[in-house]
Image 1 (tube, rainbow, N blue to C red):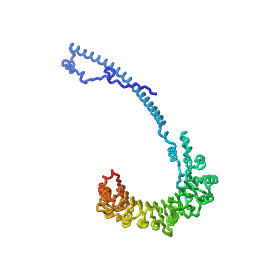
Image 2: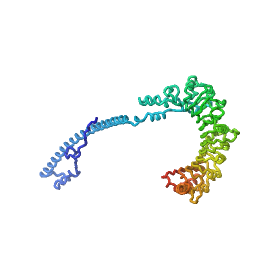
Image 3: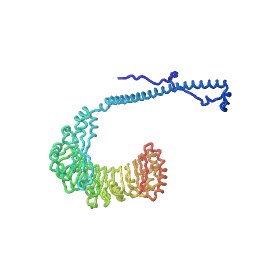
Image 4: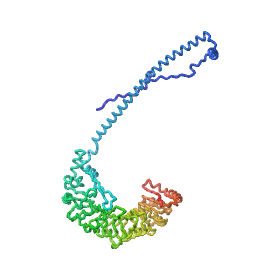
Length: 568
């Protein structure tokens, strides 16, 4: 329903004098005594002549009449001012009234628009996918400073119940899609129907002293075992040791996550057959468990994805030793992706070399404390990975860099494996010039090369190396023709002008040469600077930035170039 608001505005066109405040002009000399006959009287005490007295009396009468008019005008204006003030107050009230009505109308519009909201038209299948994102899974785990119990867990909220309270339609969607209820056992079993389940069982040492799964929980797990697809077990070693007694058959299990909450106590066990049957298991993640393959009896040849992480606590470094990593890789013969954190702790490497024919992505992080330092190169020297395409090598917890022999081991492994490596990230380690040039010359498939953490020495990248990377028209093929990302970090002494020319050639001649060369699109240069050389380095940096400015023309086409420095 519309309400008519009169189109009101102040009157501006009417010429009626009552619509305007009168204008007055009072020249200050208007009442000056300029009569030549009367002026001498002001400079003497002589009495005025009768004619002069008549003139003065006439002036006084005229002035008195003006005062009466002024008093009347002042009264009228004062009254008008009071009326205007009253009108202003009244108008302010009207403005507030209109503003309040505007707010109420805007709220009414929003309410009507909500009724037309596109979310009301979303198919139930789309709503169910949105609702799935509200599920907190797995249970959030946080580290503690305790020496025996390293983890505590926050109780997860039950999102499906909250969703079901929003509206009748949302409740119906929540009840109609059993996948929403497949993340919590017990109360959700009724609603999850026959859908595959994602289960997380966590034992918080602050509120639980169980040494085996409580009977009600074990009963539920056994009853739904044939529906479990994702299983997260965050348990102390004693409960892990009792799992074999359940004889679990998990025909749908695909992903498994194991976290040992009581530190190294798990290492007192071996050969734990926690599941009797899991033919689809292919992805596994472990936390704080180093020797995973001798500890658990699992279908290791099925595992294609594996991740091993650790807490990095100072009083105990539970990272996997090199022998343990090699033991696992030797039994996981179909492994494709692997992430491991290693802490060799001075252990003697006795394992024979291992080949993993299907492994295409490998990440190795060395965990070091302030007392011991074991580079990861002995591990790399015993690996042959013919399918490797992505390699990430880094370290955690030590200020020193990996020695140059680690990069030597990287290049030797790549050459030995005869793999088509596309991505190499190497952080916090030294690089010898001959290994760097060998990598560029011998890995034409390389696309993404990142040497970070101050990896480069003053002789690692030379002007000759940049020349070999430059695209030419003489028919010679440049190094790494598919390279699109290059990060260089360390002591940079090569001529930045030559570097800029190399990058520019990979833009201007990329499609001219045959076969084409890929454009170098993402570049980062970080220079290590000594504190006592800061002033000289500032001048060099300015010159380098000027040299790189020729690349600005390509930034609009997608080139990203960053340059910074780090004090050492």
